[in-house]
Image 1 (cartoon, rainbow, N blue to C red):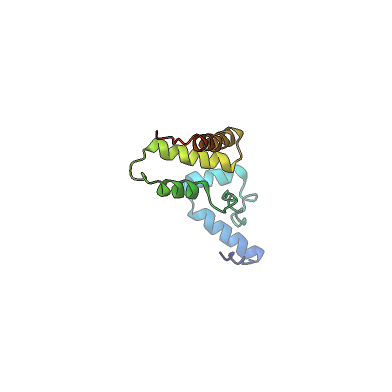
Image 2 (cartoon, helix red, strand yellow):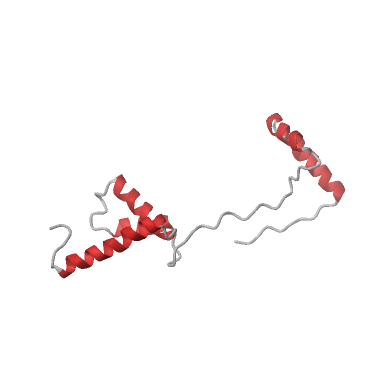
Length: 124
């Protein structure tokens, strides 16, 4: 995504533009400008960068991970809202490296290995 080009205005042009912006505002918005002071108000501030979208080591967001997981399930047509919510919650928790979700993650792996060792499945 290309960044917008910054156009430099002369002080006179800037004041003229600032006044035009102010004049087109609603009375409620003008009240806020009046409160901070017209001279202190800068309608030409460069916007801050948006918050970085958090991604895991596979470069996926928690939403992408949960969606991929849910679509990969054989019974993906029949899961409920709580099931989907749990998958998303787990994805967010693991991305944040929250100890609660790390514990659930490692327990799940341990339990699956135990079932495999004993020749059982969770559905038995």
